[in-house]
Image (cartoon, rainbow, N blue to C red; front, top):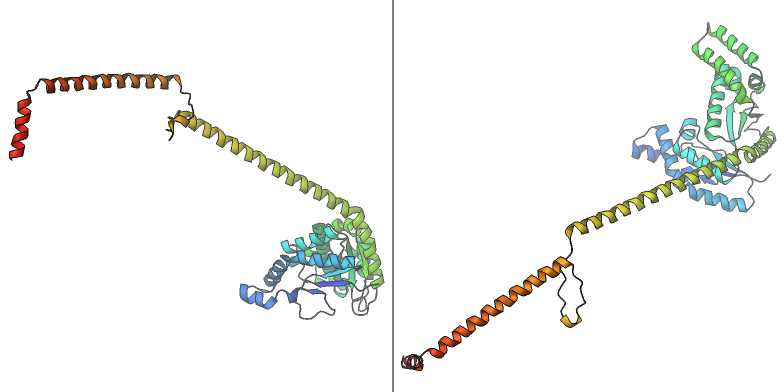
Length: 345
């Protein structure tokens, strides 16, 4: 098979036993984030993922280019802190971005020696796997790692038979000297997880020796078919619902916008009605002034103004005539005497 395209998303790891094509450590410095933001280890990991997530669209563009060149598999190595990636906003964005662009399968890696030796540890791992399955809603493969150290026959038997798992819990109670709340909870949880086990494909692998890798690739191919059969239609339905919701929101916003504009128009018409009609402005050239049709009450006011003007003109004419008569009747000598006195003075 062709070599996969590898992405490392763990900013705190000091060494990876593979060559990463894209490494978050080249973009975000984990220790610098801790110092600058005064964060602890988990907070710094989460912040690094958030910063890297802001440029993940560029990562998707690069993956699209390599997909056209014939790359079959893309391996994304997420941080070992499950909660920091699975239940964070950045982890959700990265997972959905990958799942919406290409068939995506979740591989949950289990530490086989620890799970095979303790039934409670096995139950805790299965609970984590169940939460990731229902959070991502993607096909999942259980990879029991370190098969070169310990076989996964016991955990697989517990997955297949509840009675055998219950017997292991009873033996654990006898060893610890009595039952505990954790044991009772594990018994109740095992009954609920029995249906969950049916949707999982467990395989045994060894990252050190390469044992079981062919079985893992076959399980991934089977999960690929499950993606096309179940997840892809659900993804299309979610997209359709999202697009319909966006269209409804846009239509509602447009309706509110039209209502606001109509309200503004109504207010402007109301204010113009209250203010009443305006007086016509004087045109600089009366011969070119446009004709104005005035209301009846304005015409009456103008007629009254014309009558007042005629009265004023008649009074002015009478005053001028009286002055002229007085000047005609006054003796001429008196006027000449006045002139002579001015000359003399």
